[in-house]
Image 1 (cartoon, rainbow, N blue to C red):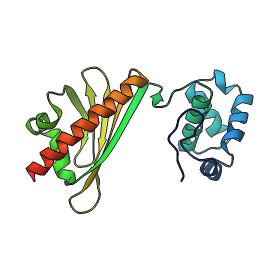
Image 2 (tube, rainbow, N blue to C red):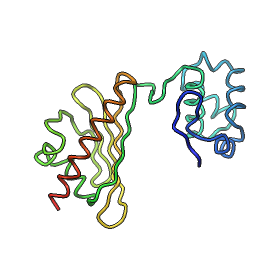
Image 3 (cartoon, rainbow, N blue to C red):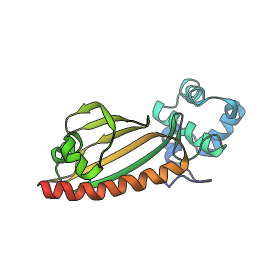
Image 4 (cartoon, rainbow, N blue to C red):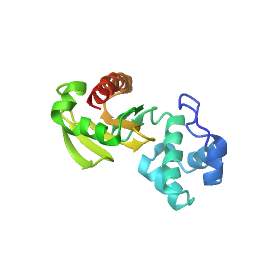
Amino acid sequence: MATKKAGRGERSVSDTAVAAKTGRNWSEWFRILDKAGACKMAHRDIARLLYGRHKVPSWWAQMVTVEYERARGMRAVHQTASGYVASVSRTFDATVGALFKAWTDARLRRRWLGPARFTITTATRNQCLRMVWADGTRTEVHFYPRGAGRCQMPVQHSKLGSARSVAAMKKSWSAAFDKLSKVVMAAS
């Protein structure tokens, strides 16, 4: 599926891809949603309209809704119903187990993340972690094996207060990943 970085006038999914999965391209969906008065509807109501009346699969109903909201100035890039989201991913020369331990072992974690103040709310060993930070923001971390001794680790930090905070958070996670890379290399 062809994608573009979503920005002003650009879609995160191509016309061809959305048409293949939903039966209509972006301009057709936007025309239908304009006619239905979607510019005055809540996100969930637009998605329900697409899913219920137009039989758009649930994931695609969300995608069409978000793109419509962006196109009509109802939502900014990186914005969700509960704030803004920063996503960062890196593939490390480390095992899934080593990266998971780097998160869950407090002493090891301080070496790369500093005195982070969060509570782990969900931990599925070597698969994912969810946490709530002292400021109320949330982070979700996944661990994907990528061959012998390699692991991809995407981090999604949500409930951020502004679009400006997205860039700062991405920069912060990137710097933490640089330190983490050194910590897991030293530990192996």
